Length: 193
Image (cartoon, rainbow, N blue to C red; front, top):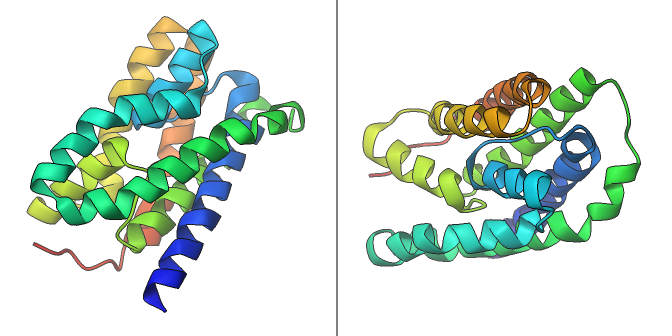
C-alpha cells in the first residue's frame, strides 16, 4: 500500500511541478533554483527542452546516489523521470496564464514548492539538487527546504545575471515561495541517519 501511495504522490507532485513551471514561470522567463532552474536557463537562452536538460544534468548526481545513497537513487529516479517528462509534455500550458508577473512568480513558487515538498515527505524527489539537499538534511538535520533555498539562490543569481534583472527579481520571489512551501510541507518529516 505504501508503494502505491508513493507512486501516486510522485505522479501528483510531478503534475503540480509541471503546471507551476509551465503555467506560471515560463511565460515571464522566471527561474526556479536547482537543476530545474538550470534547465530553465538553458530553455530561455538556447530554447532547449528543460525536462530533457534536467535528466541530462541529473546523471552525475544520480551516479553519486548509486554509490553512496542507493535508497535515494531508487526513490528519486522515478520522480526525476516523471517530473522531467511532464515538464516537457505540459509545454502548451505556457500560453494560458498571463497574470501579473509577480503573481505568476508567487503562484509558480507555491506550486513547485508543494510538488517538491510532497515528494520529499515520501522520501523521494525530482533528483538534482533536491537530492543533494536531502543528503545534507539526513547528515546535518538542517531542514531540507532551507538547504534547497540556499542552492536555489545561487542558481537564480547566476541565471538572472545571464537573462535579465526582471528575471532575477521575479525568480528571487519564486524561490522564497518554493523554500517556504517546501519547508511547511516537510516540517514534520523525521530525519534519518
